[in-house]
Length: 633
Image (spheres, rainbow, N blue to C red):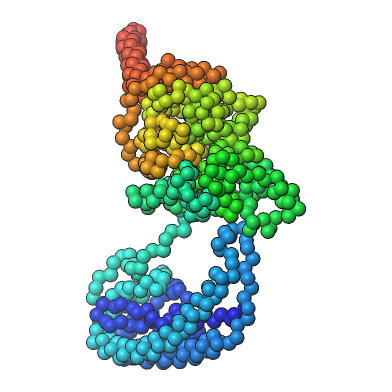
């Protein structure tokens, strides 16, 4: 290995100076033992009161500076000699699980070594030149310093300001210098340097994103024929930056889900098939992999690329990493929110996940990120009740299957169904769960096609009459949202065809924040019109931050298809959730209309209660004199 010499001049070339009003720059004194440690003073002596007391101190400073410069020159000369010595060959780095294909290769390592050697040599040459200049500067500064200090000794007690290169002094006791100034009761701050960034996350909305998810692309190189492409999350991330929302949030680092986390939801075969690439397979059992990899089946896509089905592309080098990064990032964000480190969160991830079942990828999905996050919350944080709301326009068949028997996870989906004629064809209202999980699977299955298409009024009515009453009765510990935006206006009929606005998604987010103490995590699923998904993401993050959202979406008229779909669901789920039955007759009302009616009913009840109290009060006033008369007799 090439010897590495850490030179002391690198930290001492630019001598930090004390800025004292009335005096010139005074160089700090360094000990002969090397770079100093941060000062921690619990007691300081009074400053010198006369030039005679100060003169020996300055002479001592000059001696130390001369010794220091001589030692630095010797070390610089030694560094040059060592840099010319022969180098032993470096060991080539072994590919690891976290490395992508372009990060491994001899050319990258050789170029890096050459740059390091060239930079080291340039640095040593520059340091020698700077030392000569610095020596001259220090001598001139010390001569000027002695003259100024002799002429202005009365101003030595002014608080000193340390440069940015030093940490603030920690002084718990100080002997005041002779001065005519009135010192404040509290010690003045000893530094103007900016405070270091906080290591603890702010209690605010968390955002997670990682550029590795951009590499999941079809080998054909043409994204125009693939609705699920890297531009989706790239556009959303840029929009949040442009609007200033990223600065108000806490950006957390994404991570890859481990194979064990993936297997909490998916089979081992599925995880090894789609969670490994040629690089990280080096760490796995080749005998086990050989039998599984022989079962792989891919299809040739019309674009010339490869897919696991007709629309779900596969990139041998990058798809597994991107899919695991999406699942791990959602899980990490959910953990931060569940533990109270963050208020809520939004995960800008791809590929999506809610169509992936335990053993099959489909619909652009490989690993069910939201389901994996829910399982990890159950297993590692002992979350007893988790609500998953899925407002993607397509039914989350994978999520439903994973938790179909689990009463600790309530799955509620709002999706286009059309009597099973819209992808993926599942999610009918009669699919309520089985075994112990019966009643904990709720499907608001829209019917009637696009005549007319569903919009804000329908989604708000479904939330008011189905989603929120069941959710409040369930009382979850955490809320996870499969936040697909393909129901937003701008998507053609094959991909959605609905007319939900961005403001509506923001308003739905705000309603969910009333649950679980506000612990809500949104994870991007579908949505392929870039303008629509950027608008919707912006609205949802704004809602998570508590920013105002206009209420002009709550008075729209509802279509007949909504009443039919929601009443059907209420009649089914009402057998398991008592909170639904009183709302059966209000489905046809707009959100604002129902809200006004609730207010009127509340006012009526309060008025009746006040009348009852008034009657009781008058009766007691009549009775009291009679009791008084009896006492007087």
